[in-house]
Length: 142
Image (cartoon, one colour):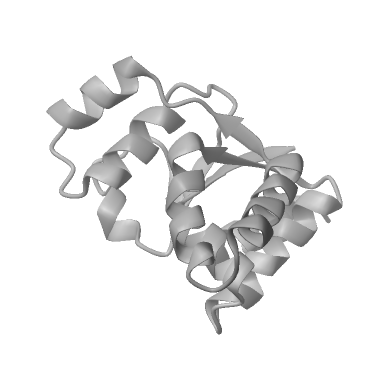
């Protein structure tokens, strides 16, 4: 089974049905439901996702959505060491640096899935678009 870290943009695409991006994001979650991939999120994805979803609905509904998300994904802790590395990194976006250094703590990860590939050009972990990730799962599921 493959293990993918989802960048926050993929999660938000899925949860807010942000078209056309939500269609391929939904395929990733569908593959996860079918046991073909394990999806991982960093802890920082939850507060970023909360911020966006809360604009669209109530606090109570946002928390319900995040609880459901948490039940179908694995959350990777963002530690003090991760923050130090992110602060000292040459990533242009601090949130992406946190995502990356958190991902590095999870040895099972095969890749980071994001729509913003260029944000992870310093990554030593493979980085795929959602379409590439879906294609990889489909090719290994045959």
